[in-house]
Length: 232
Length: 232
DNA sequence: CAGCCGCGTTAGTCAGCGTTAACCTGGAGG
DNA sequence: CCTCCAGGTTAACGCTGACTAACGCGGCTG
Picture 1 (cartoon, chains in turn red, green, yellow, blue):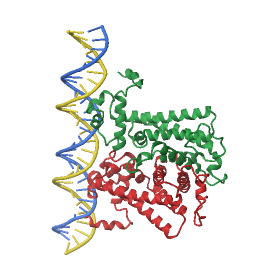
Picture 2 (cartoon, each protein chain N blue to C red):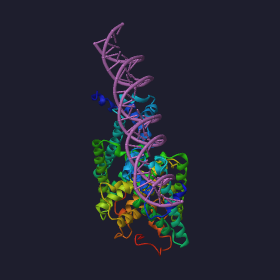
Picture 3 (cartoon, rainbow over the protein chains, first blue to last red):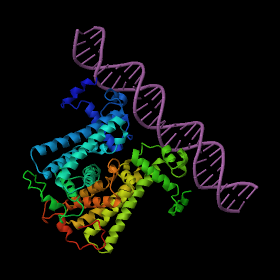
Picture 4 (cartoon, rainbow over the protein chains, first blue to last red):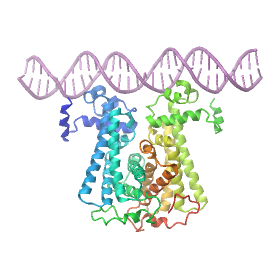
């Protein structure tokens, strides 16, 4: 029964399972894990109630699969980009830009999952939660390394806190989907990128460059492959 | 029965009601509104179970009072600071700094409430939710005005989105209380301030100042009453 | 001293919800 | 044509958890 999950590798059809996961994610994000019943999830995909148990062991299993999946995708994507940046010999600034863009893609494409990711983590069984935490930690590590490569004067702790807050910044997009509509995706992504970059550039205490962030940024070699959205 | 609530104005003793609210906030933030039972809340204050109903109409009422209270305190505090800044003739930069510091105080002192504030809003009855949303909107307006005063080139929309994301940045402190301990309060506050300020200073698209944020920041007079944490 | 009343207690009710059980069905395979 | 089974269905069960009822008790007040 479980072995046929290999068939899900074909991304052709949404395969009911993924359909259920998608709707569950949306509902969980909207009203919280405890706030949504299995009947609602079933109704959202056209079947009713306990029919879900043909696909999942229980409500918890859905949440677990969602959270583990999201943190793994985040980490894998981040690591891939970091490795590509290193292989291409990009500047620290460009490497950080790549991480930021990856996270922004995620925050804009999978808002609900991002929301769930830091909201319902405690509802998981110990094993799953541990796994998610590990992936999260590794992802943070990726960022901390990238940030400290660009701003060597930052303390480990400063870098870590800054990275966390920047996650908070980037992950805040779901909140403003309601009242004030966002501009088009490209514009929003560019704005988020500037904000994140600006925050990180000001993380250093007082210091030596006297200009704050920009002075330090000027220290690394002129980025040849930088996109149009990093005017510095 | 309701009229005696005027006695609660005396802030001398924690008065059981406030004690309950405090514990409820902590528990709600930890495990979510649906995740905590009334018995637990009661146990947290030394009484057990339905004894709470001598003080509150129900679980919902506690959440409502918490959320309305927090948003009102946020808005009132923000407005007070904005008015003081205006009365004192402070520069736009100093006015924004005041708002930021106020929010940071809040985020550090009342982490649980901050968490609840953007997590469990949907569990409220229509009336309460409307009230909270109104206060939130007014608070955002305060910030948008302050930001646009300092960075006049920003679009209304850009400013609004930026403010929201900065809230996300500042409100992310609860997340990192667990694994990696924060430095002492003053240091953390200063770091958060720099990050927020840095983000906002980079909100503008490309543009004209050529120096970005710092150029504009240099335009306002040296802040006489500023603390040691605003070195600019 | 007597009675009221704020404040709690314990036992019980009742609804909601996750989960299970038992049954049904349409299409693929021998 | 019969069988099997993936994938549904509805009915029912059990538990949890919010809320109510009935009662108890100490401390002001008359």
